[in-house]
Every structure is written in structure tokens, then in C-alpha cells.
Image (cartoon, rainbow, N blue to C red; front, side):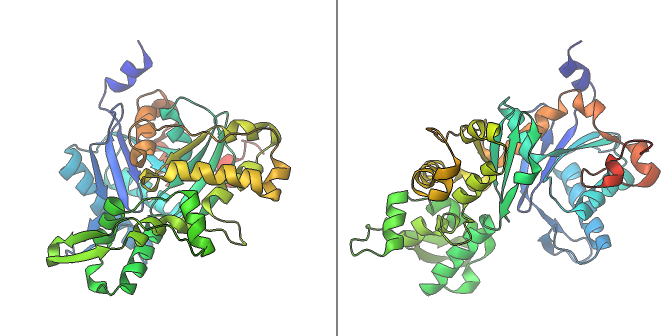
Length: 378
């Protein structure tokens, strides 16, 4: 019997990708998540809504995760989690306390059968059926870069920076406040809507003209009138704002920590034989990568640095061309889709953490824990 049939003849595993801003949820073997919802929880005690990972004590986090998972199971998926298999897509450098608390909620409170934790950068590549790429995840709270070579994550070359969706929102808010817009109007949902509907990444030539302050400044794009429905108010989004808010990801500085620099530095920290395949295999995922103009601008910046920056010209050899993969589906749920594919294979049987194993010591094995990776007898 084929592997797929043997795994999926039972109840299909539930796949969760819990991000800082949005959570993707659905079942293994499906092409799209059943629901993409804000990672927010309505507290049963007060009725107030707060972000899932805003907590002060570990017990508070546990209660919030339980409430959040109950909403997922009984309101959106409409299934009982008892004796179900789970696939959880996670950041390889995520907080251990969140991982342990999530596992405790699933095993102890919801009595699930098994949980398979999969790293987001690596599992995203399974949607392409390729083993080598530089995976760039532009999320809400950060942008992270992980080179993967022959199916192995090169942990020492991992890079991340704090510019993500939240940094873009802060820049939009700053520029709108300077135009006289009231701060009370600029809620998080309004800022996100302005970003999605009106903003884009401009070309490298226009950006360089603006940064050099020449007299012949490029003509800004037209301004847009944005209506805030809750307050029946109209806000004018200036054309300059629309094309400049994403420049925080490309601004040159002495730290060399803009997005193009981080990608090049990450590739340089890999071995010589891995660099050329990685240059020709860049994969953008995450909601932040869906903005119009991001991919061509990033390609322009990388080629420009490779040609004109002496630091990179000395270290990269040959006629290199940066190439990008097109994602299967939308970039904001690519990692979830990889988890759904993984949950439809025999990995869910062989690599999962079972309930009996977990309840022995209530601990999730971690790659960074020496005790979990020590061979028996050593």
C-alpha cells in the first residue's frame, strides 16, 4: 500500500503554523489552510483580546495557549483533538518556553496522540521538492535567513534582523503622524490595511536618487485617499510614503545589516562549494515577501552589491546570477503547506513525539540541548 494511503486512511493530522501575527491551520494532505486567523486570544476571565505571546508568567502563557487552541479546534476546525496526530511548524530558534508550553497544552490538556515539530525554513523547501536554497522568511516581527544545503540547515550561517511587518507599520505610522493624522485613528489593523492596499517596493534607481538628495528628485506616485470605516474618516496617504516605507529593509549603513547584505553574508559563511548553488537558489517566504516589487528590487540590490562592493567582489568568484524560486501557492502559508505535505508522509509515524514518551519526563527533545543529543553510554 502506498505511504500516503497508509497515513491518511486514519484521521488526517492537524497542521499548525503559529506565527507572531497570524496562525495558519488545517489538515495534512490539503493544498490550502482551512483558516488564517490573527494570533490573538480572547481571555475567558475578562473577555479582552490580546496577542497570544504577550505574557508575564509561564502559567499565564499556558492558559492563553489552551484558550487559543480551543478556539481552533471547536470553532474553526470543528474536530476533537483527542488521539489526533499534530504537525507544528516552528522557528528553529524559537523560544523554548513557548515550545514546551505548547507541548504540555497539547499532551496534558487535549490528550493528543503525537506531535511532530518541523523547522519552518527547511520544511518550506519540501513544497518545491528541492534540497538546496537560501530561505528568506519575511515575517511580522523579524526577517530571518537560513541557508539549506542538501537538506541540511547551515545553522552557523543563520541571520536575522528586526525589520518585518511591525517595523513597516511603525514607519507608516511615523510618516502619517508627521502629516497631521491623529494617532488614535492609526490602529494596528488600519496600518496593516494601508500597507497591503497602497504600499510597494520602489526600484533601485528611484531609491538611490532619493537617498542622494539630488535636485532632480523622481516624481512621487499619486497620493491615495484611504477611508477608515470605523470612524468615517478619510486619510490621505502621500505618494512618497507609499514607495519609501519599505526602504528600511534596504538602507545602507556601517553595520551592513540591510536585507541584501544579510543574504550575502549568510552565503559567505557557508563553505566554498555551497556558495554558487545557494546564489542560484533563493526562496522568499512569509507575508512580508508578498509586497509588489520586493523580488525584482532584491535581485537588483544583490547584483549591484556583488559588482560594486569590493568586500563581496573579492569573495565571490565567477559570473554569478542571483535566481529566485517561485512559491507554490501564496508565500504567507508556504511553511504551513510544507508541514501539510510532511504530515501526509511516513515521517508523522517515525519522527513524531508520542504521548507516552512525553509523559515520562514532560520534556520536548531539543537540538540545542546536549542531554537530548548525547549518545547512549557517553
